[in-house]
Image 1 (cartoon, rainbow, N blue to C red):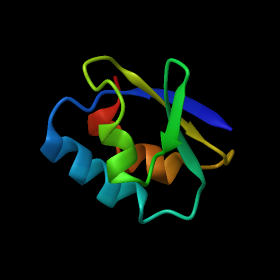
Image 2 (cartoon, one colour):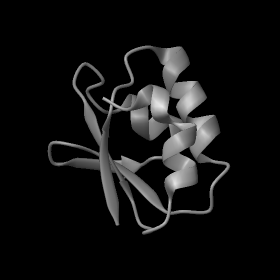
Image 3 (cartoon, one colour):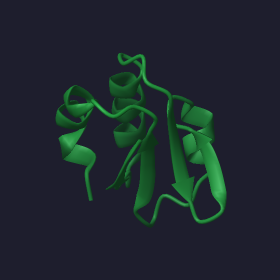
Image 4 (tube, rainbow, N blue to C red):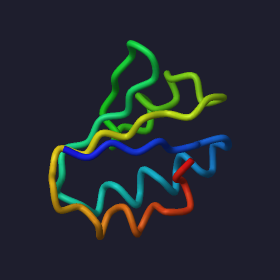
Amino acid sequence: MKSVNIKLSLAENVKTFVNAVNRYPYDMDLRAGRHVVDAKSILGIFSLDLSKPITLEVYADDCDDLLNDIKSFLA
C-alpha cells in the first residue's frame, strides 16, 4: 500500500482527478481525518473537507504509473 497527500481545491480538479484514477485497476481510498471515501467516487470526494490536503491510499505496491499521472495533485 502507498499513501500520498493530495490537494483538490477546485471542483474542476476533482473531476480531472476522478477521471485519471478511474483509468487504473487499483483499489483506492481518500482519507480526511476519520472520514474515508472511495477515490473513484466524485460524490464521495465532495463530501470531504477539500480545504486541507487529503491522503490518497492506493492498495498496490507498484503504482508509479498512477502517481505519475496525478503528480499535479500531489501536495
